[in-house]
Image (cartoon, rainbow, N blue to C red; front, side):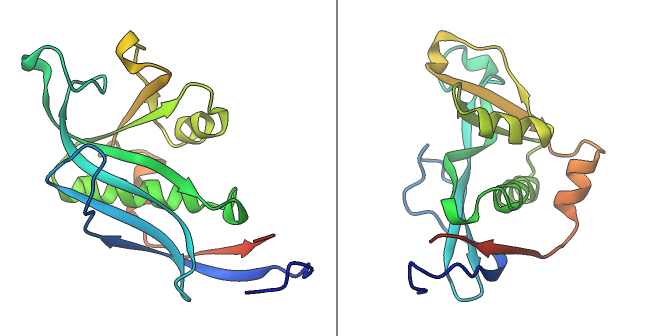
Length: 170
């Protein structure tokens, strides 16, 4: 660990590790937890992905005819403040998309707080579309994306790549 007074940034290569998720937020039986970490196992962020029965607009109750297994980014996609705005969240989301594709899902759903402007901007930039808001969503917006759409976002998630980030102020 660097001293707090150091102004030099440490550069890390990010790798995404996938592990079984012992306590998935939605209790999905098919699930994984994705960790963004450096080669030295420094945790930079993470998110869960799982398959849940839900409607097209992210609701788990309601009309049984509309409920089907769907992949969802579950829990919170988070990045440690020292590594934000460097592509870590995008790498995690792309790996969640790859995981969902591997499970045979055609779309990925996520929920985001209505007041989380940074997350809404990121997800919109990555091709996620907001669904109509229902009172059952509370203070969240349901967003989803066809993860097989032939666009730049899908191509980026399919292409292997390496990401290097600077650790600032940890």
